[in-house]
Length: 411
Image (cartoon, rainbow, N blue to C red):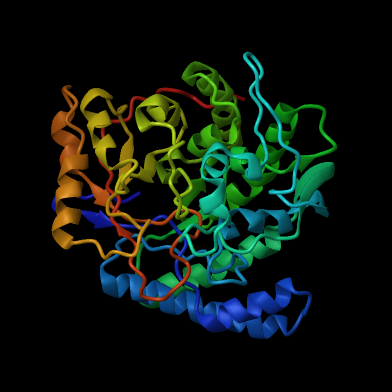
């Protein structure tokens, strides 16, 4: 993974605006119109080539493929980063209840469980605003049905991920770009669906880990940077009703971290980055958990780099966490700087100030290494996958220290 000691390298969080033609092709396919697969593939190849060139021309040092291979049939779609996995996992019945139609579940002391998406605490606290189409709060169209695991979980997406990789590598080569990253869903987020087969949530979680490991290996074997998308690590806090204690949540979440470390065991950590977010949909987000409460959990993940939201009004102040938390040797942080949660364009000066503020200042013999930074535009869950040219959160920045080989993955 590239670092620099003389300038800020730029990257972003993954999802980029899709061209209208690609959205329409996906819309038709999602509606059951199979259409011409070759035509869709040609449209994808052209679109990925164009978006990689666009990133290069804008100064993005480590571009992505825009997640264009993940089906998105609407301009506003907060789920493409996740729902793509439903089509790459065997053992799922896709005709189950939708994620908002699943029954609500209540946690109690000593027994933390996830409730339904409709019963999330921010949503119930501001139910009237979430239900008002003119309020500005939206998560886009909701699928009428959702997946339920009904048989042993397997990874069936090798052909799809191979196509994604091939077109992205061709685009990188054509644009003369040396390094690129590709996103993949982490087990904790992948497992937030119905389960009628496995005996426990933990058993199902590890089944997701085993299945998705195939995709992780494919991306890394192709020489790309793997980004693990896992909003569940932070966002699950809002999906536990009533609110648990922080200690209960940490215990609940560490099971998911251990499953992720199991999934990436033996894989090259120096080419893995982890993406954490609180969802970034346009909403109040008053039930986001504080970064300070989960930073050690995030750092327990066996990745080389960690990207996270750091530029919206709920989390912009949390650069102060890095004044107190020592980043382990060999780790890199990629804070997302300006916000993408409203319609304002971010001032370049604000981006620069945010970049400087986010550089860790914790004491220690390696503190002089903090100048090695990278910033990236932040976009969680396809937030700015709506309109070409729409402002994204530039930029996310890493800093690196010497690797001490700590925290080996289990298994």
